[in-house]
Length: 96
Image (cartoon, rainbow, N blue to C red):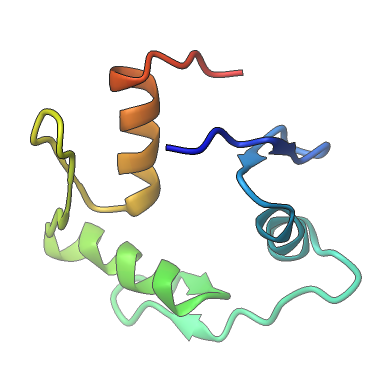
């Protein structure tokens, strides 16, 4: 598992690639061109800029937890939650 090297100076969130950091800054902090949130949850109305984010969000409404830890078997609705779980529980990397 790769260690995030790029940190957002606004919120301290970390990313593995500079491209991910740039996308985050644009979407989360209204970069030069704020991304249009065109993917809308039909259950709660929450809006997302990326379809994958909406698809994972829908897991919270359906109760699906399709992301499974290959070490301990815990399951998660979001791929990011699985990533964080592995980092903190199995790799023993402390949060910044």
